[in-house]
Length: 167
Image (cartoon, rainbow, N blue to C red):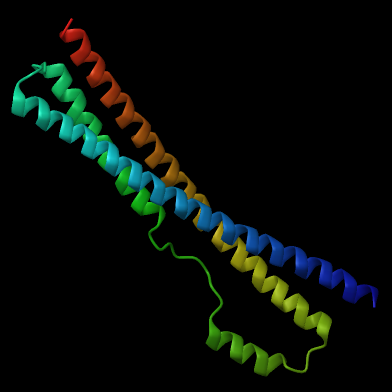
């Protein structure tokens, strides 16, 4: 009986880890969507400001301001593309239903401890694969957020250059 309780502890722990990694995946994907939304809004703001300035010629834009504004819009678009990349389907191991059916047929008579050990080992492989995919998602998200921050900085620099130019 002691062996059965140890097996349950390992199985439960592995299931908790797998659930936590799935939660991490969902969180990364939600943050990726947030980056897409905010980059789109900021890029639209930057392009709209440029169009407004050009249309009215109210404030002349220096070459530096135009370069910063265009650079900001480009980096925001890159940030949005990165946000899309976070949500792109990444290959990671998943349980193949046909293989599972074969395994169950072959090992149906296994005792509980052996079955639990097999399932726990499968969960461990799934966890390792999902964690690797999530680590890649996290790096893409970091890149997207960095591009977004750079875009915001370039838009702020544009506003500063225009403001200083009008003094």
